[in-house]
Amino acid sequence: MLDGKLLLCLGLRVHPMMHQAPLWLMAVGMGVYQGLNPPVAWLRAVGRGLETRSTLAILGKSGALAFGHFLSMVVLLVPMGVIIAALPSTVLPMDVLMRIGWVLSLMLICFGAFKLIRPNHPRFIARIPPDQSVRWSFSMGVTHCGSPVMMAPMLINLIMVGSWISVFGVSSVSRVASATLLALVLSAAMSLPLFLIGSTVAVTVFRLFGLRAITRYWINFDLGWAAMFIAMGLMGVVMR
Image (tube, rainbow, N blue to C red):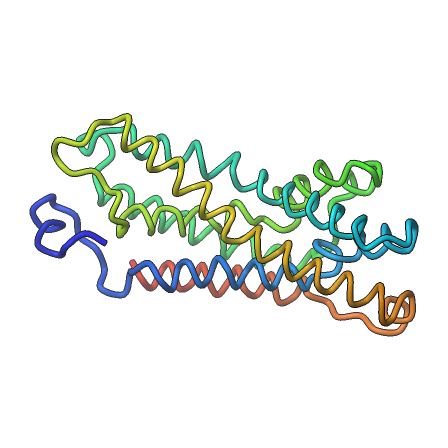
């Protein structure tokens, strides 16, 4: 993280509550939560295991689902990070960047409220063939889960408080490369826990419970996911 005096010299005003550790923990926590979510992470993997009677098939299915979710975030976060890093401070001042983050936080609140009212999956997702796991997970991440929207304010916060923020003498190419890396790592910080937790749950259900766990027990994680959107949006507004 940049020294406070250096930030002041650069004209960057960073809220004292904004630091990196909670942001990364939030990203990992969201990945864990999604990994526990049956429709997103492990239900299809269990189905693949029951079909093939293979643990490796479960891991492959879980990996494909996590990769699709990863791509759904990359397509938004990487271009956003590159644009922010490429534009000079005269075009995109820190105050404007903070306002953009505020607007995105409001979008999180609206999206969470929408998911509370209409928690159903988009119908077109059901028409994606079962063997196209990456495509299905990508579509789920972009539409139903809204993970890219949730991670966008976090990316802006990390840009404002991260040590990669450009200082005088650092080339624009280096800034863009650093922003790209940051966006990829942030996407992986959510996707990797999703894969690990989803795979663990899928293998456990497959080996110990089978169809009994699916037919007898069910937890609706969508309500909690919608509430998390609203909570993160409110936190983003308060922090600004």
